[in-house]
Length: 432
Image (cartoon, rainbow, N blue to C red):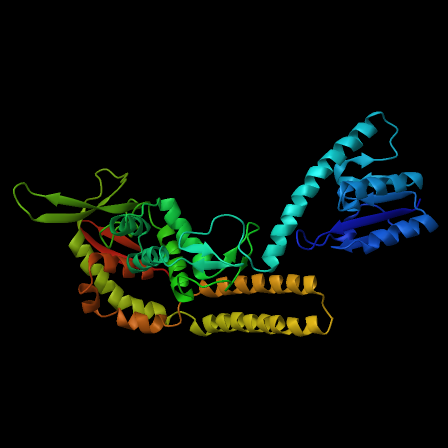
């Protein structure tokens, strides 16, 4: 029994299928990518040496329109070749009254699928040209000719939002800042989308999850974007709503005795303006419960511990290994850029046609975007010099609580309170 197989795939929409996945013993495999030259060769071979059976994945692979599919189905029927569409459960050799109804149903589905396919192909061609996806432009931009253009009336609002977040590290605080200063009311969810939206970094993201870098003018720099990502990762480790808390130790302190986070409580005395701050376990399971601690004493000990231990912790990091990773990523980016620069020459000499060159350029640019994303997650190169600067006690004492909160969370993962009878001491756990 002679069996042929045929597959068609559009490289704009789907990966190339693996020809070894057929669970049949095949005499020949015909495979088309974008164009249907192999399909024509298949039908010519069927006229000279017809197989008993032809395997395809879906009926729509036989043509770009419903008329083409119907015409080729009729040709196969005239030649007496059994057609099996594996993924649709269609077998033309079945002698069943439901076969004609099944075929009509599949042809009706093909008509809708091909309409959807043409729309997706149009979107895919736009991606090859690095054009923005359909829909409204993000706030701060407007649509230009094939790319986003900065809107001079709204972009200062977005820029100020990012600057406020970079200064204080608080998403909710930045949202309130916009409402107070500009009357621009957005939800916290919208604010988070702004912080993670590649468009504000000069990149274009598509629905398939792929990103192309440097497609238009950015609102924030690469360095600012990397800092935003670090702040978001840092805030995700904190208890809810503590990222915007007014006190610098909020969300960082944990009681080692009961393993409960400690929140900041404020105590006032009637008819007096003075207030007292304490750190108290949120959900202590001990009896009697772990006592609260004076906030100012914990703050002073934290500053002393950071000044003493931070330079030692940074010195223990393996910077040569970190530099090797960064150099490797930068070399990979350089190689990809060299390949990208060679594509116009290959197009001029006819080695590549226009569509293939565009597809190759698109894949290279998405790979470069992924490499740049990995590079942005690495710690800043000046970490050692920063550690030396912040190891001076006066540096911390000169900061406001909001500024101190920012720097604490940049370096500290957790502060453990270790109790010993009525005494206590603390241990600072750094993020690296």
